[in-house]
Length: 102
Image (cartoon, rainbow, N blue to C red; front, top):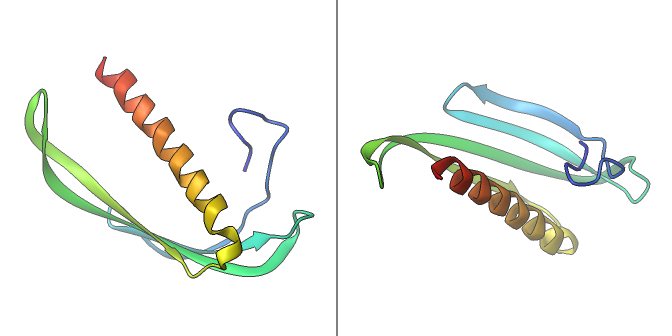
């Protein structure tokens, strides 16, 4: 994985997919890297589920997708870093959606 804002920052991902159901569910186990970037001793699980829903936008009523994200278990020592990462991801998504709506 390479940081979009600073390509000199990268991280090797050690993941194994556990479930892939297109447009329904994506689940994987990820072995977090140690301070040297090597596979560490912490494994976390992530699951993304997709639910079709009716949405209301300024343009009217239509079809959309609700995504739920489940992550864990993970040690308390990485909670804040993970929160910050997700906040950043959602902030970028929000900016893209506002750009698209303009």
